[in-house]
Image (cartoon, rainbow, N blue to C red; front, side):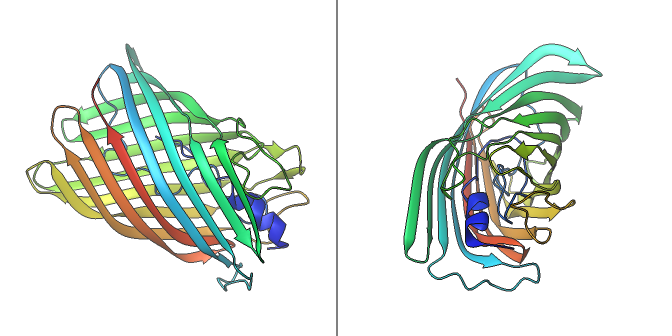
Length: 298
């Protein structure tokens, strides 16, 4: 990892988008537009035809920078705090394509980003980078569901190469998505959401972040009363190197793990909670994240 400003530019760009969408191989060795671990139980279960509203919220705190060997970099007073509120609209059409339910979705992340280092602080609040795209939902059985999607992340958030708290990343990302869920009211519940980030060039820095494979996961046990309790987290692996003047010196990776809960009342109300701590971090910031997902019928 090179200079602190390069790492800072990557950190501030955490966006919420949901349902899907993005990873963290970004210029300077930081985070990407999708908050790792955001999704939880039922990530692969597309709802029935109609318009559905979900809300994602999260608090993310990073207090260490790790180099390519996993060693903490000596950055005085380093810290990044991100609060996100991201409404997501999902429209499941009545049409079938290749046997799956055709759907479209969009996520509009609202961010509050605070970055500090060496006695200096930056703060930004505003719209982040919007995610949108089509999806196909499949339901092989009442307990097994999966989704194929293609998300596009647009550079809609404000960006300045001199402000490490900028809520936007200033480049497009194309993200294929595969999510699968298996669920039992009393029994095993398992969810996996796989994403692959193909980042475009940041015109302000002439740098292209490396491609990355990342996944959100949850594994729990249904208690038979609407509750599921277990573990969840994320895995992130940068697969290609950055290119350009602000490139990181190595590829990034991280693993997150912690408790995960779900409640569903069977009438459309859904709430999930996840707290995760990162470890085995390389070439990016390390921290702790808390996420909430809620769906309310309307």
